[in-house]
Amino acid sequence: MTTKLTLTIDDSVIALAKKYARKQGKSLSDIVEKYLMSLTSKESAEETISPKVLRLKGALSLPEDFDYKSELGKALSRKKQG
Image 1 (cartoon, rainbow, N blue to C red):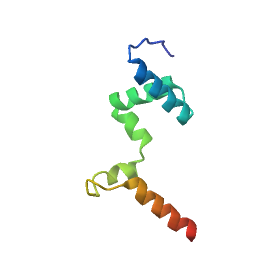
Image 2: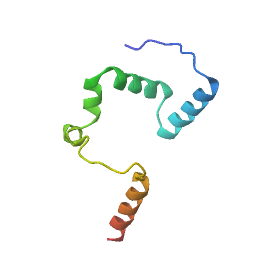
Image 3: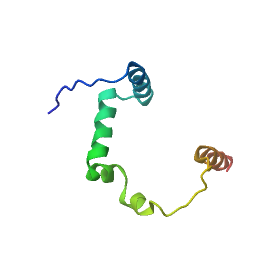
């Protein structure tokens, strides 16, 4: 069952959230619902993250300035090259 909810949020935040939702191909309601579930339910978080990944949490220590996007790009480039 779903219930309609009215929220008061700054216009600029709503505009950015709608843009984000569009880019993700999801409704803003779906994004808000999933976020609230992740905040309120440990079970929900564990369902979206596999147990294997949860066990790895905290196993790796990286420098503060580590740029994972850059490193991921490099790794994907190496993979494509063969």
